Length: 416
Image (cartoon, rainbow, N blue to C red):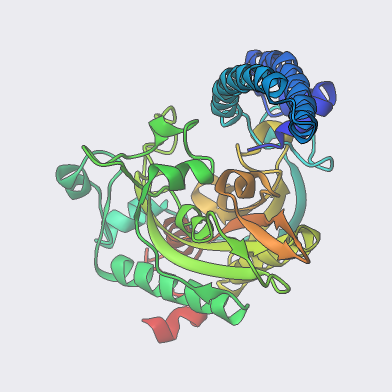
């Protein structure tokens, strides 16, 4: 959640930044109205509290002067004031609750250095890494290769579930498992602690990282249970520290985890429905870091480099892209996408997003750290390292030969 004090104190400037992320201006005006409704209540409560304190001192003086009858009269007025304060505080608390519910729908404020733009066409390329392969034969797409080699079974995936579920068979299943193990080992070598987490989480967990209430239609909910299937390991990993004060954060907390991810992909029908690029269930290895605010930029760069080096180790050409304001995710203050080269599409496609969320999730989740005698909000960061299915796609297409066979990157040999 954004800092409501900052929004109230600098409303017009923050509003300008938020509008760059396509926030509903009506929502911001509703929040501003709540701010204005709170002011007279707060002032009235403060005045009544001051009056109550003054009268309480008078009562003490009267009792010392043995003027009990007069003191009793003033006590009645104090009781009336207490009753008024109680009613006004209840009214103020109700307003605060309504304000909080509105604020949960407001996205994070983009960093000042995020490029201004409307959509992915306005994203800014930072660098290209690795050489795009050339072929002297007609290449096949991963779905063609998958059917030919009996690696991917789309029809049985639909039979078992519905469209956008796929069965991986034979070498594809083994390669998927090999990639997961390789990615976890790679991240561990970079200082990330491996964690295994639940694949279902409660409402509080989803709310803390920003999936609820804004994106409920994208989530798979368990019928008659207050549980949701996770859309990414970012959710449980970040929430490990919900409602906690971290005593020692001299070094960032760095975690990595493999999980399946479940997404309804509401509103994206018609896009990438062929093959396994956009599925309702897919595997991903995630990185999550929790840091002091002054360390988060450095950690962000380290996470981007970790994901990029992982792609390089697999021999996959990719590029780094700085997302513009209009393409930035709800919780992110800044995001760099890593896009891998997909030969059949003749373009780069997203395979990882690394985001600095600043204190946005920490404020929702109440994750703090001890800084001397003060408790301060941490910064949280997350990034894919990598989306396993899309890595499988990239390997299938980039490592195909003229016979339609697929060669395996050398670093995966020991995992197969």
